[in-house]
Length: 133
Image (cartoon, rainbow, N blue to C red; front, top):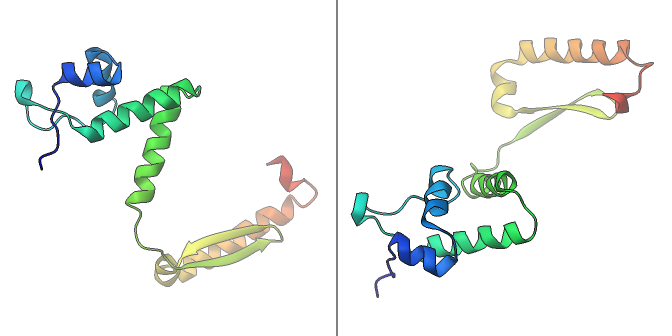
């Protein structure tokens, strides 16, 4: 069974957003562009769902900027690369440097220089509170 297709007018009617708002959300990357081009472009149920989600988030008090950041972080999580191995180096108690194993293997001399410099900086400021950073 084919997925339903909606014109922008049908999408506007179904979601309560104006055509102009829908186009703006597409332009801002909040929803995917319509499938097809020009007057032949159409929307589907995933567009309806996304617009209804945006409406719900707006009703909860989220700004469009916050909604966009939430959507981006969810997209990033969905396409995140496979887990990567990391090495942890203590600079001073309570401060660590995390380095991917790949970087650790490629630049071990530079990494040691970085650790020495970081430790030196942190020890120089030992009188200062780390919490004031």
